[in-house]
Length: 187
Image (tube, rainbow, N blue to C red; front, side, top):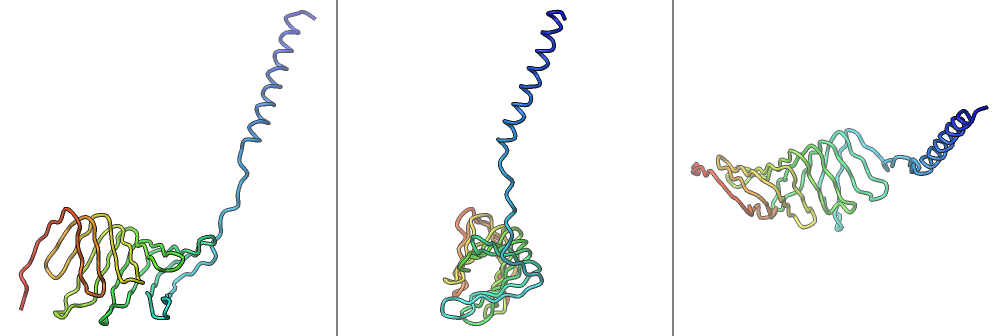
């Protein structure tokens, strides 16, 4: 046996030992796989009516898919259609691609392609809000949005950023960058 051959064998042995040590160290660094969180329950093609603390209807929602989160007890909804009772009769109708409802059902977050339509006024016209995100607070009959909102009332169109809606009085306020096209009232 020559000295060069012995050095080669020791070199290969050192590489193998280092590789095994690195492999074992990497195995210890991988976090354990956690089981995915399951939902508490799932509803398909549902209709759900939520009541407030006094037992009155807070809102009704229909849709193809509802999932309740186990830990937070919140609801995640796909393509929901909400109906909120109005103070003087009629209903506020809202729809979106997705929504989230807080555990106490005191907040409804409508997400993506949101459209909300108010009850008819004395003239029969309805106000319509279109935005990407809208928060409804059914316990205090208010709604708000931080992003761009398009408001349509009859033939008039307003566009602005930020929205605050007082649902009982059917009054709304656009906060910033408001632009509008006002059509004359028809008799």
